[in-house]
Each structure stands twice: as structure tokens, then as C-alpha cells.
Image 1 (cartoon, rainbow, N blue to C red):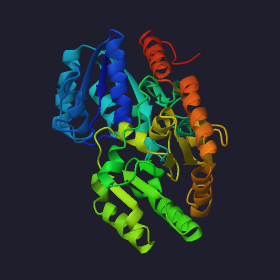
Image 2: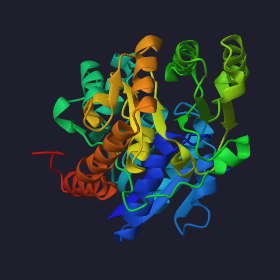
Image 3: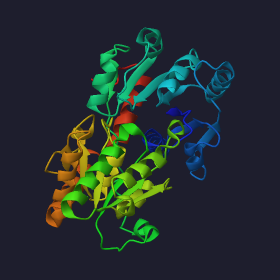
Image 4: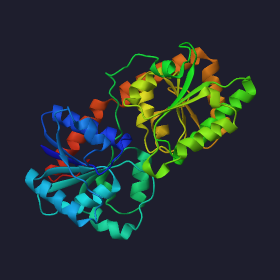
Length: 371
């Protein structure tokens, strides 16, 4: 199969991790793969040295004529096949730029947020043979917008590379000057308000008030462009709560999955995580994970079996969950083993690649994406 991936994203977060996994996986399975990316983007940097065919394109948006003309020229030269997009503006760009060029449009929906102006976008989504939702929660939200035939919207959960089980390295502990034996609560992901990091800070402060000392908290991630100054605000909040001395912000880490191997307890505190690739990565490490019971997280974690679930925006509940895990090493170990087993059985990367490859074949043959 000839498969072209398109991303106009400058940053590198869960959607781009997923796209890179797909591109590498499909190339390894013998398909003709190319990736159209902005020059200088996080994804472009990671494509260098992989042997993947990367086509630089500074695409601003789907209504920008110069970039769209360049995209159409790239697609014409590629000669058709599957065109797979991942962020909303790229779906619209693909629907317009690929018209009449022999492409089958496939998208992946990574967001829970509502679709604006659905009537205007319905004709664009009509050009898609399949929309892959990363969770049932995401699928339900997308179908509710009534922009696409529900029969063409299928759930394909993200996957984790279970073969890549990284040993604890204590690199973050050394960077912070922390004893290797001290238990660490960790968050990894974007620093933005919907991720609920303020709730995590308050939960740690509650533990300090109750126990007399705060657990070590490692926060790994960077602000997206629209959130400049948010990291400073989080630092000020930690100081006001009296936990600045035990809270460490590491900013961008090149291999966040590897860095998070240093955590003892992995926290996913989002108000509603569409799926939670960071959740899978933490579970694949064998961590005890505490996550919010919203969005796609309950589809991954079974409370008390392979992690703990707490209500979103509830610092008291999150503090209780953290206290259970920090105070009971046997529970941490049991849930960590369950988490690893859960990923191996339900969310291996190979299964996700199998499913997407099957869908490509079906839509190229003019069949629906699922029976």
C-alpha cells in the first residue's frame, strides 16, 4: 500500500507520537510510507535518521492557498493511496487538497472537544472513508456532532511498545539531587490547564498537611505556545502551597517515556483524557498509576485491578489515592504488575498496527472500515 501521513503540528505530543508509531510500523510491514511535516517541527526532527520519507511543508491551515497548492503538488506526485491525518485542520486540508487525485481519506480523532460549525464541515468529512477514534469516549463525542456517518467511525485504541520495557535509571533523581530510594510521584505530558496539574499540586499539599512532609513530585513536560507563562504560574502555586522544595519541574525531556521509568507512582490528572498514551507508557513500565475517572482513562484502567481511578478536579480524592499507593509498597507492586499485564493483553502496539493496516486495506477496496 502507498500511505501518506500529514501533520501540520509544530509541537510533539501524544498525537505525533501515535503518528510516528504508525509511520514506522507501516514502513516495517513493507508499505510505501511518506510523511508530510512542517520543517523544524518536533515530528520532523524525529523523522530524521529513521529512513522514512519526510516531505517538508510549512502548511499554515486548510484555507491558506499557497500551502494548500504545495500540498496538492506533493500528493499528486505521490500518486494516490491512503492519506491519513490526525489533527482537525489537517482533516479539512486533506479533504480539499486530495480531491480527484486517487486518495482515500482516513483520519484519527484524538480530541474530546466539540466540533465548531458542524454544518460547514460536514461536506469535508463526507470525503472520509474512515475516522478512527482513539477511545469509545472520543467516538461518542465525535458521532454526537453528526458530521459523519457513524458506520465509518470506528474505535482503534492507541498501543504501547511492550517490548520496550525500560529499566529505572534514576536520571531525574540525580538531576534533582534526590536520594535514589525516595519514592517519586510523577506527571509527564503537556503543561496546560486541562491537564489538571493544579489539582495534583493541591493533592500533594494535602498530603504534606496530613503527613508532615510532602512526597517528591516530578513534573515533566512543556507548555504549548498558547500557554507561555503557565509553567511559572505552576511554580508560584507550588510555592504558595508550601511544596516548592519537593516539587521539581524538568521541562521538555527528549524521551519522556524513558524518563518516566524513574517514577514510583504515575499520575494522570487530566480533567478528561481522550485516551492517555502517557497512561499506557506508565503502565508498560509496571508503574502503579492513579488517573482521573473521565474520558478514555476508564477504558484503560480497571480501578483496583491495574490502577486507581479518582474523580477529576478532586484534590482530596487524588490525595487519598496517592496516600494509598505511597503508604503500601505491596499495593504499588500488585497494581504495577496488573498494569503491565493489562497493556500486554489489551493495548500492545502490534495490535493497533494490525487494526489500522486492516482498515487501510478495507477502505482501499471500497469496503466499510468495519463489518
